[in-house]
Image (cartoon, rainbow over all chains, first blue to last red; front, side, top):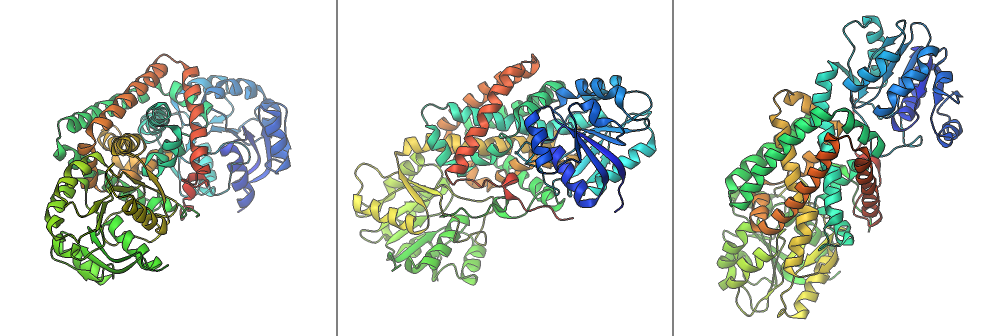
Length: 306
Length: 306
């Protein structure tokens, strides 16, 4: 594939930024990748492992002359970064982000961008529990969905170009409003992370059971929750604070449903339990059929070593 | 290894029963495996795929002459099965089970067993989301913990023999009281399953978000929960109804902790969120270090196919 962009700027070089670098290298999507990260250690590591062709001391310097600018920083940092890069953006550049929240991004980023650039908020629904410049890999986006939330006055050609970029990275692309995105992700991603973080905290505090027992016997189910509860704390703080209304709404529903289960257990209502438990299998089958999950038992975890 | 038991009876031929058959075959732990399952289809399948050397029309017939009897049926069915097999048990036989709850098993099973057998309740903390006679595999118990909860008056030689059996299956063995077992498993297994079932139900009911969106964008975190929520509904109904007090206690703690997170989100208290989120990573690292989890990102799920 010939390069889609002459110069791509990655602002932030964590899991998503570094994965974008790998896939752009692999597919030849950019002639030049410029980069910026707030920490000097990350910048040095990015150069050492070849994530970027040029590294810069400021976000403003990194975006100069870039045709595509991708903000790969936590949601809460995007507004400030947009303020820094605004005056340095190339005429006609496409600016996007990868944040897990979209209305707050529109609110925080759009006011800082000049009228001559195309701002297309985006969110690749892909990730691992790892973070940092060494955690990325080229296949992260393969067969995952990338959601774009262009505003009504956005240039369709810019949206189309960004769609092609994500398809070239291996993703499927869906377009929706920022508000709908935030509602969908509240239930498919934000609430699950909150619940996972919470149960790990609860387990760590049960004094009658030691932490070494929690760890030893985690294969009974608990360990499944610890994967997403090992995700980046700052990223997730920003997600919850910036999608407050939708998260609180979904959390309210979750708690209501949990009360029903709690009552069924207390009163020995086995029928309610079985009915509810039976529905869940079909959802998992559908996720597997949609190519969003492995069919291998136990996630295909390799058998433990002896 | 020479056979540890001349004749082993498997009562119930689902995931655990069939896995026991496979590992006993592989390691040569039994000279003869007799089997019983309630459903004729399961009995026929067990014969077809060679799980048993003899299949029987009743549990009582299956246990005749057996040196080791393993109850591999849901917790709620163990009492009735014990009543059926009691009069047919061989003098000096070891009787055990694999149930996820132990005080209820002691309560329901012990009264039916004659004084001349050795009853040693057990629980291999291992499983997958699959069920049925074809779901088993010999490696299921490798490096997993098996918890035995012998009663105070139990013959130590029988306990030791059962420990050796589970070690030969690849497990580590731990001994504790039935009460402590039920508390430990309530937090490491029962509560996680309840929460997973609940969030899948909540997601399925969010009307503003279609189920196809829940499925499409499940890689944002939700899909991790669907694995254990695809577990056998009857087995799990029995677990919750038979470990009610400990499950309700842990659920109460979970809900309290969740209220704290909910309040932090509502009031924009990012510090509380980060502090809590930061603790979780260490727990996951410990589980990986203890050999109870893979270190590969994303559980080592194979990259999705294009």
